Length: 241
Length: 329
Ligand SMILES: Nc1ncnc2c1ncn2[C@@H]1O[C@H](COP(=O)(O)OP(=O)(O)OP(=O)(O)O)[C@@H](O)[C@H]1O
Ligand SMILES: [Mg+2]
Image (tube, rainbow over all chains, first blue to last red; front, top):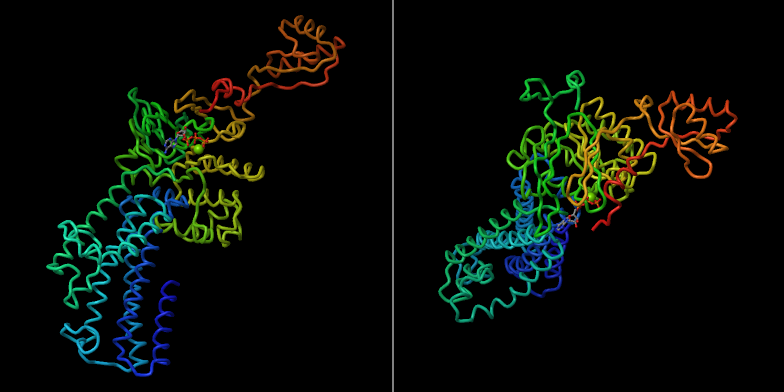
């Protein structure tokens, strides 16, 4: 359903551009800004799903029925988490294929290098550029989803998890630029500075001296902390739903 | 406790007691179970054994700690102290082995509302190995949901959800069924049906059943044994005689008579001490034979008898007596 809404939206954008623009743009320019919009949507959708996944079972009380099966709590948590990740993966893959097919159809396939159209500093074709783009976005997506999942499992309230995660993603993310210019060392370790990995594709990091490796390391540490905390709390806490 | 002969019919583990004779191992053992949340002691040093194949009632006023105890029995809550064993397996140390033998409803029968009852059952069946479609059909028939099973749970009444809850709990043929106030929301016919098939499950399939309730009269009809708890402490455990096996025992009978004084005199002539029970009745301890004799004597002496009724002290009276009709909180 959510996927449908998103695909419909990008379809409208492409068709609209095709009909109303007075010159024919490269398929990759359209692809590019549709990706930006779509990933915002995918992030919101995934967050909603992740936020609801554990918390909704608590709200509805069905968690009790799941936990009294001969499965360990870790296994139940894992299957919930895998479902969230699969949802994120499915959306990312479908979006890529759909954008590729639709825009090639509407604007004609363009096999030129990425540097001609969207990323001046990138070496390689635009098709490969976007595979890499989607891969980076997917990594950020997983970290964000894991955070929402953690809030969901720790606070056991879907509303809170959605609210808090979306707040962090949307509001805090828009102030990231402000944070980035602050001259404190701790800013280097803020999660949100690193969520935008695509910045490295164009060779212009948000903060001077930051590298892809460093960003991935920071994201990795956050990820491990999120997972450990989620697992620990879910396994230990009493269930009084 | 079951006799040995009774027990052989069931699939029971035997342990040899220290004395050397066979006894069946209790299906549930609660040993000095304690639960504290913050500073509040909710369950205080509770010890209890559930014999195999019995319907065991767990009775207590609101807030006594019934649901808390059940939550600990199914591993939803940790124990502050003590140990719970189900079929010999510790619920804390061997959780999966222990819980495999348990089917339960804790508090309310919550299901996925956006799925049909049938889809819910399939969902839970998937979490347990080897549950056939036939078994699901069988269970649906047993709880009497009929064709409504294919409707969304959202559209169910409370009683129907309760039935679905029971279906979900017995799906994997557990040895122990734990039901937290299962009659809540059922109509009188539903309560009767539930009672009948719980008794049948216990009798035919040897399933042990642990039911909590504050409906006392209900427990009397349903259970072989009742434990009473209050403020997290076990007050009493007692067996309940099922209907039909009494009569020989002496109970208190009330005779409604035309002349109380004369009736007491007649009773005294038979060597029985009767006492006035209000303006127009006498009460007397008697067994069945004596009741017939007394009645004949009254009629012979010209005392009109308008009615005779046994005044078994109901569990309810006993319960209120024991808990002292005390304030809950
Ligand atoms: N999570 C909790 N934190 C603190 N106190 C709790 C918690 N859960 C239950 N209690 C307290 O424990 C006591 C026992 O509650 P419990 O739900 O076990 O009662 P109950 O016997 O099931 O009552 P009822 O008949 O109303 O269902 C109550 O006094 C309740 O306030
Ligand atoms: Mg309760």
